[in-house]
Image (tube, rainbow, N blue to C red; front, side, top):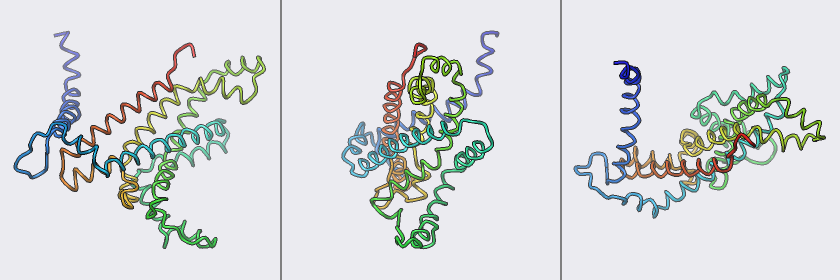
Length: 286
């Protein structure tokens, strides 16, 4: 009875995990190997047919490319901007606290709300951005209907939304660096840029790994913002793997094809995560 007691405590959680997490994962893999269409009389086995179809699907290729562009651009800018803000706002005076709060505020707002607000602001007829642009004599720009500007606009809004989160995490990481490191480096004659390069950045590497992981996975799975602001348009120029997955699975009812897309996204997440681990790898001797 004593040996079984831990399993009795873990049983309910394991049951919920199995039913609502593990089983859907296995079922989605099973669906991806079938021509599974909602309402069809038969769901024939196609093996890797859905994955082969994806490789030759121009919409999938564009969605994959857009997803990678959003992820690389958003992650790079977020980490750079977040680190700059963290370094500038590390002190605990009232001004730094107020500015940190202002940058962090968008983080607590849902992506759907952010998308709706920015879609209104960027409207060329009634939006604030269009009004300011016309007042400056530049004319109104239809940011979300331009094939050249729609994707950069989505990336900008994604960065605006999450920069505060990266900043707060990195501020916490900066405050966790022992002051003795800086004192020892200062005694050796290190200047400010040398302190940043040889003390701050190496000590901040675990925190950088964490925030990079979080914003990368968030960007790879970006859906709400794109769906609300552009719906994947114009002409699929902002389409991502998740918006395509949604369209295939819930609009076209091609469940098997959508499941294959979800597994490709899973593989992309794993590969990117392994790559980041190699880039940010560290040990106690660092």
